[in-house]
Image (tube, rainbow, N blue to C red):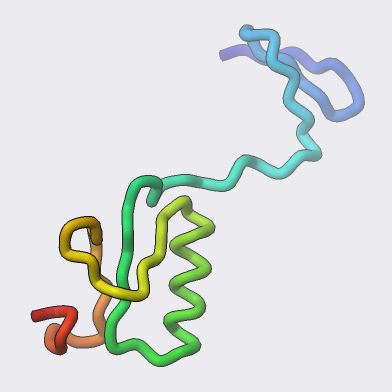
Length: 83
């Protein structure tokens, strides 16, 4: 796609969409549609991963819902949620 400079830090692509170069990019959604559950992690790590999952478009579940949870992140391969 070619772009042409419009001035004031804006560009236009072939679709006539104006993009302001000063605007931050849209947040990534690489985890969109995923429901992630955590197990056996310390509180600080859970908080950090929870935030990261949501920033990347995923959903965080506190309880393991085997019908809907797509991924389990566990400290060790054991425990109630892992079994």
